[in-house]
Length: 228
Length: 344
Image (cartoon, rainbow over all chains, first blue to last red; front, side):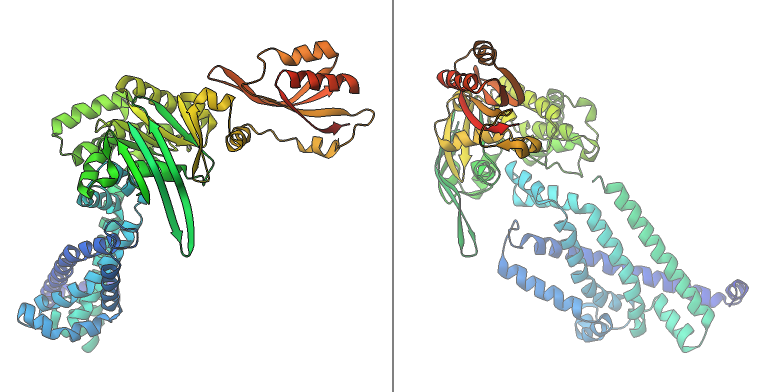
């Protein structure tokens, strides 16, 4: 499979090219919409996990333990099983269990606990002295969260976002196998099931480039906001 | 301005009960710079953290500017903390904010208008001498500059009291002096009451007018700085002052030291000058009067509040008789002399 064969294939298979472009669009929409919803729910969950800890701002042992257990359960179910296991829920939310929109549901559910733990870790990096200083200044708990904890943890949170998006690219390929569409789906249907090595190769290359772009963008952003 | 009444603080470490503070009573008048000095683990950090209730006392009350903080609800406490500024050993500046925005933080918390924040922060940065660093991030500042930013930030909400928690302990001696100077300046210009805790004698000597010595969670002694240093009443206070001045015998002297005088050996003595010692050039008088030569090994003398005090290690070269007379003469003049041994 030389570079020539790839170029020739590109010219000869116009229909497949459009298929790949469509698939890339589906992958992007799966990754970013589940990522977006995942952050919207996962970041507050991570903040809550951090705050409810012992000696935390809103110390609450019961809440912390129960959230911790739920998050651990979410993280221990293999994604491919989660994908199938929550089909009834997916159907309830989007009306169908097949297609890109349906794939977003398990992807989001899978991402939330992952993000929560990463955000919790990022918040843990914020020196406790800063929270104390804010308290001494007369900051309300909500002000401590928005003006101290989140801005100080921002580099870590952006890093968490990057890791999550990259992971979601991988998960979205799995979601493809159950009818979610996307590059993973094309790779498996054309490459694996039809023994078309070239299609498989191209999908992998596109995925690699996609991951590189996400990671570079993330690293660049972290650099810009990190003044430590 | 600050009244600490009957404050106790108990920590539980599993089954163990630790009395971090016991029966602390302290009154700090408006406009004074009050120092609390103690060795690490003495409870001084717990004490200062009790003043703004970062640490809630197990019992007792804390009255700042006429308000008993221990009786406030958490919302009221939050608002009242804005009248109490605090600076820390490790500065605790937000790395995500520039110098300007760090100083602006307390004003943002209080909901101050943008243009008002700008003029207030600019004024404060000028006061602490960092106007040119307004847009710099803390990571690019030196320790002394960071503490200046922290001081400006603590002053932003126009507090009546400034708490300094080991504020100079992470700084070198020269920077420490410049920070102390700044604290003295704001004490005078803003008539701010300052409570500081430290383990460094230099800090207390440098700016405090009153001092309390804390040991093992108890206030051992308190009073005017000069008095405490010159006439320590309790053994603990005395030990503490001594420990900060402590002079150790150099190793090679120690190995050559004998307990009995023999020919060719001379006494190594430790002289302790206190506020009670007669204020006269005693060392040269002794040398002349008893015809001995005095070689000073090391010495740690200080002058605080009109009083000379300190420790000195010296060898008395001369006959046995004249050395004894010299020791007796010094005793008479209220210098405490201890013959540590005889060095050949």
